Image (cartoon, rainbow, N blue to C red; front, side):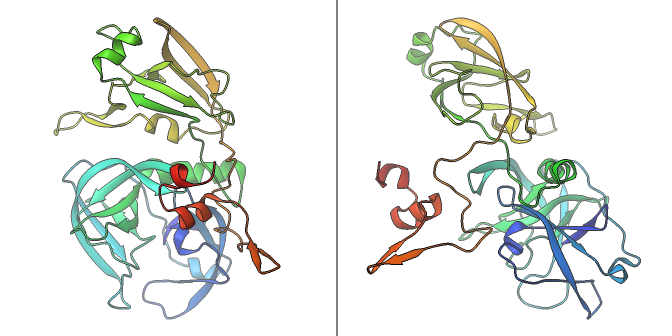
Length: 329
């Protein structure tokens, strides 16, 4: 963990979920202080802690953040990975900036680095050459070499801002309630009456519980999101750099919306370009996905049978990753 404004600590959610006791220790000090989790977001894998003992904060300075680093920019990761008790510092470069599955139904911006990240690094800061935090160490890719992931500033900033605004102990993220198909096939484009200058993605399903219900329709082509043009492969420009223009999934345009924020789309409906607007919101799952992460899993035994709540976690454990296809209707 590391210090941010307001006498708070930032770490990973997977480090403290279902905690019974959390201890924080300053570097170079043998004393452990009792810490309290004040907010957690499983979807972005971030948690915020505080320590009530004032002596813990003596001469501690909050760290400053910096923007998403460029490709091949040097980064330094600090933490306490397996193999020792003292702080460990590893160095590498930014290998990739892309969206990646965080679990719990979230697909968020991620920085891939080649600095070593191992068990125990989670929640530690990653610094750039200016000694500013550019991410939070999160995970590494198993059965691969030198592939680690850190959570970048846009995700961290949204997490902190959401707590400052709502003061909620358990946070969530706004999402999109529709699925799409890429519009790269010439025959599909012709059927959708897309002209040569038109690009976008085809809406294939719209969730009845999502904020887009009643606004988007199956068969619409989403061409722009908040003024950003969507390519036929579902990507948008991320930023200009010396490595030419980087592109990431259009989902990035929706990931950092707050509840009630306006979402402005330009769509192609039956050959006509139409602007639409709706309010961003969280999507209530018909089958809960978070049960058991922030509470004790519940069950009931009757006549030798064990009954448990229906959750996506249970379906995944029982039917595997293809539970949507293999599971019960």
